[in-house]
Image (cartoon, rainbow, N blue to C red; front, side, top):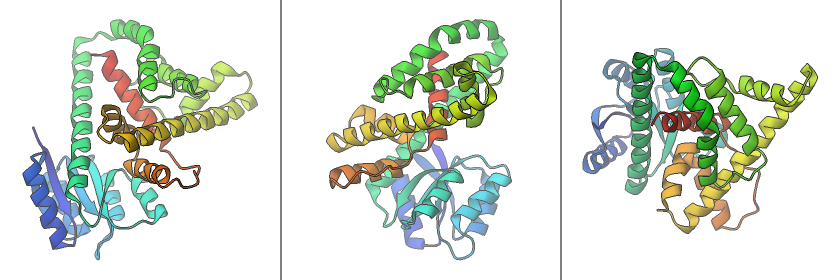
Length: 297
């Protein structure tokens, strides 16, 4: 089963190139193309594609506003932003609105195929996890699952952290504790808010409200530094071997690929390392979903 895709871009040449690449690589099927945000919104809500490739800047309505309207209307497909804009604030806002990846203009066939391949992997993975949840709900094996999770969550998470090269980082202990709380102790299957996670783990470390608040902030900082270390590891692997299986799997799945590319550029050009940024929520959500999948496999 291939991805269903709609392209929204005011540049006819760009739309044509994207359609040709998609048709030739066989990853998806283009259901339609729109010249602007308003036309695209109507088309997407009618067709409900799996993926939307959408331009950031369009005359009638920009991509960010279009995405906001689509989400408010209940559309929950995946978005890939098409843009030549390098403004970090605009790029950051786009990620906050639900962008999975960026495709940079001018259009590059290799980048388009690579991004679509990774989005396709995520789409299949999420469908698979959804099917597992539905099957478990029908079988009513909650108590059995709880026993399995209690025994395996720690091991599953640590295995993934080993692959990411961060199991020895100080924040890895916090990440394991967060996943154990999110999967073992909560009675709902949705990913909890980060604030709830931090406070729940902080309560196991400290006593007293002031101590909990302080420890929650410390946990967030330790986790941020640990995830940054994972980003550095992936960027380093990518520079050495772009086709390395760990890089191909973990880099686009756990990180915003824009951040990976930027980190690789800094390393490659031997620039002064900056603090950089990581999407903590995305990292932990993906880890949560992957841990659930491995527990139920």
